[in-house]
Image (spheres, rainbow, N blue to C red):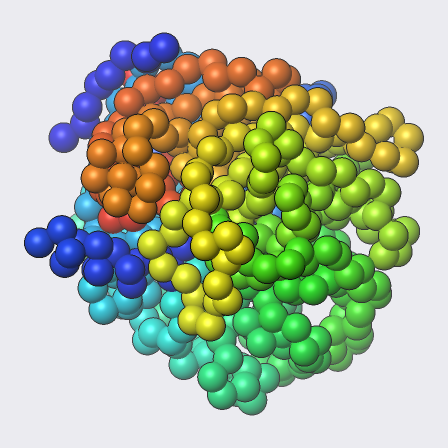
Length: 487
């Protein structure tokens, strides 16, 4: 049942380790107004015609991976919350035009990718569909198309469109379309990133560095190989696709037949080794498009330089030389991030995950240097100047975020889950305390903090919450989904 409390002062790969941890331990309402186009943190990126509405169509909100939403969050007053226990880690939670919530999760025991349909009024699990499993990194990133179907790749390398359908009072999930990717995905490789282009073709990237497109109407698949690893999602705006490998940022377009074309490649500092609190050696960020005019002028990632990662901002039409390369999260001696940034208008917000104790790593991940570190948390805001020729740090915040934050362009607030108490690997799953946290994007100050719960059932594992049009926030956790609404 829901709880009412007053306000007080990536990832499916992690599901496999939760089984080890456990065994060792023995939308309803009227639609809210959309974002104010005059918001200092806008504009939104353009609406992709192949996805559901921006804000709740992808893990990162939209195909540009802006990390923003046009909807308000629960605000700074008291909250109601309830938890849907799914015995799964749920990295992708999206909301369709009909208000229904779709979650892509990976079961704790068996590591089976499973799609869940949740009741928007209560969060109850209405229907589920298990998919063939492959690599645990495959299938983390999915999106809702313009018919509210979840688009995902299964363990057999079939691109699926999964619809939810009602017969009488019963809901079912079923595969409405399946398109094989064939030899485009080499044996032993797996899909990591997935996002649609404006013409309806679907872009994909594999962990082995294959980048391609698929036309689900004709079944045609076209691809190229970079020879570099990819461990994060990919992003699209009109005519452009961005992919970050473990060595470089790629900006691509497509030939008339769909074959990817590299417009430019920008190598970055991948650092001397993988950092503790990151899942791979290289950038931990999905590329994000943003800009003050149309939301697409710039593209950004954070590199893996030591001791602090650098925010790199590129002009999309300007080639591979960054307009700025600036150290971020410098409030601590060392920093790094496994989280995609928030990028909107002229502002970029970066979360520190250095030392975050992920309970598992992707197969083949190299040892980190150092082998472990304290998780200090913190966020930074960086702005591109008015001339688009450089960047400056606006603020550093000490908030220790255990989730990937999201910026509401409607109410001008950043929403995340903060953590207090012991944050070592055992502490996060036992005694750590998790709070619904609201941050002022203008100053980095904590505006409110509402207690959610203790231990692994509330651990958000650096996954991003999604706001529905009525302001309800859905946060994936290590064991299910938490539904948070204004009291």
